[in-house]
Length: 159
Image 1 (cartoon, one colour):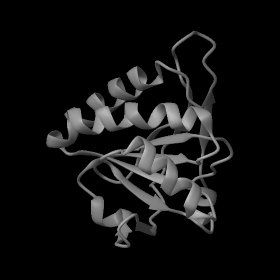
Image 2: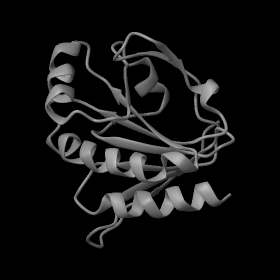
Image 3: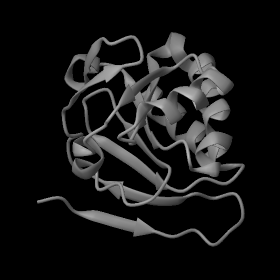
Image 4: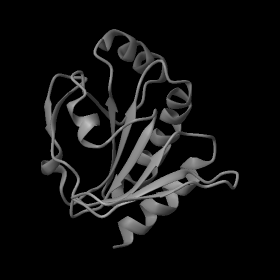
């Protein structure tokens, strides 16, 4: 059974965090280029899973920040997987065209993966360690949350 601890931060600049000690649910989703991506094949990397939707303003704000994080830490074994949760890809593809992130984007058109990760807000950002364990999760986004993500990414890379 999954045990979740909710930490709601009331201080400016701190993300509302959810911490879980369980394994990240494995999944296979199609990427923008049609390739099937399986989470279990990414073991050994620190991963940031970002669940987002085109209609979500904070999601659009966050994508460029996540792109910067991936570019900064990619050489140290870190990757961002953006997971779009919409049934219609057209809106998502327009956002991707506008923002042009370099990180991999996957499509969860049936919302099976977002359900397995208990996604009930937009965006949701989950950090997975090299062993495939969820270590940090955040609901929502406000400017400055990326600083918290960066601290957590650095911690996981060092382990």
